Length: 366
Image 1 (tube, rainbow, N blue to C red):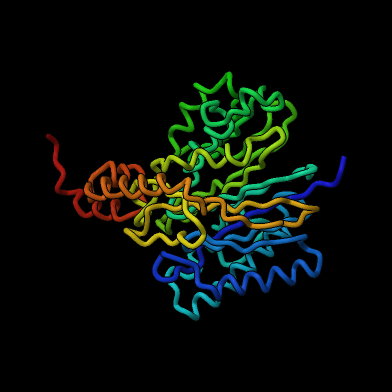
Image 2 (cartoon, rainbow, N blue to C red):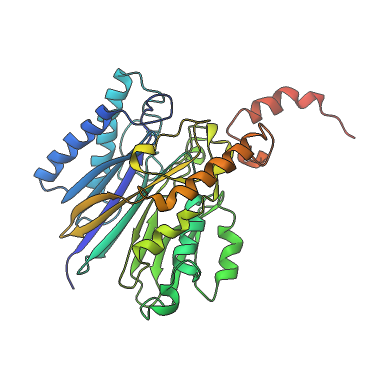
């Protein structure tokens, strides 16, 4: 058994440029400077600083395992330093994902979202890192189901002996803070009851059933639930290992050829299509959307991140982008009506409680 590598992807919204649209280059530069020093000192093996919309994402490789205090503190301090720049530039929502004043142990419950996985590096280790903006953790449910449980998407489930036994899906209840693991294909129907409600249930991990090897990991932080008020959408991240017993790179990308409907969009309160875009187009502006996803492709080599390749910078996804725009046109015509606006139970951290309180005495029995 060789030494295990940990890949940590940690993100935070610490200030938008302009409004909620994009990431200011100075914030990226600050993060790169801090992580360069961390690499020189041996805290991390390698890193990449990425972004999608107004979210800063720190990709770090190391040998310290998941939920490591030193790694999480490094990320927290990087976000704090970048927030200082954000405030100086008066960027919108400066530091909004940093929900507490001081770091304490790890990032759980502190605001930033993170996905991590620990594994022994294979002879060839292709990894895809997906970053989304203007949506929530459940946005990964449909793509992960297609990647790891749908043979119409992933041919390897049928023809690759190392995948034929299926996968294990660890699903988290984001309201009750419980988790359950489903075996696929035999428990697909049971699992779909839950993951088909992405506002409450989100896939946290996928493991290969035959040997328990980790295949995918997501961030499942719900900012509104942590803060008790509306502080923006969660803008989740996803890590997927590919090839040799996992979905091929093309199989992992294929679900995004369909821009499925997700919650988020303007003020985190609307449904819209998840549009796969290149890095340069990951700047949602129309009605703060539509929601975006980018994909960074890497080959891992002794813990070093060889890449990234801009995986959605491909005309094969042009139809998905056109469909996303057409769906956006259709949904926007609903204005403040459902199903464009989220249902009332999802609106509890917007103006709804204040309006209900103001009008409570005007409601009478039928």
